Amino acid sequence: MTYLMSLIMLGFVFGLVAVASNPSPYFAALGLVVVAGLGCGILVGHGGSFLSLVLFLIYLGGMLVVFAYSAALAAEPFPESWGERSVMVYVLGYLLVVGAAGGWFWCGWYEASWGAVDELQSLAMVVADTAGVAVMYSAGGSMLVACAWVLLLTLFVVLELTRGLSRGALRAV
Image (cartoon, rainbow, N blue to C red; front, side, top):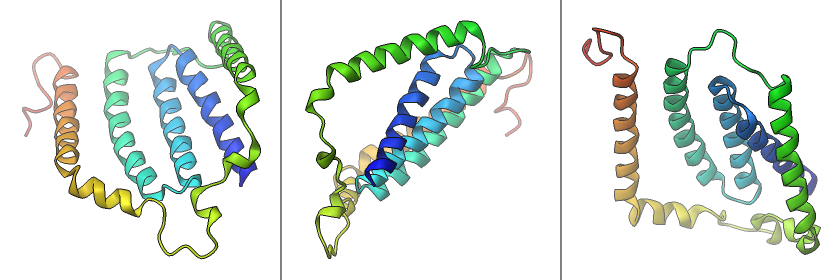
């Protein structure tokens, strides 16, 4: 399990470098979806299966809005990809920064501290994130509704910003 989590975290870091170094919104939105999936994989590995599912669904909804907005505003016929020289300079620069920060903070990490929550109990009857689900729906229900409303409002704003010259996206409704 430690090797799988290490591989997911390494993919997470490379995905963040790919998002930060790419000037094209097409590939940056794709990188954000990959990073969201790997981040949810990290949460699943540490015992938060329901939290990762909710985060993945909400984050992918937000990424769909961002991708529609960026694709409509930046219609490039030939976008820059990850293999070009200007992008590779940024990739190598970011990887050097991440490597230097990892080398600086390396002394405090031990492999024994990477155990997941549910691995420490032999016959656990309750998953680690079930109490958090109850709190999210009881105490945080109004915030959940507010976040859904903001996402819907953002979708309508993006549809109005990307409308044509005379016909809006909401006028057909």
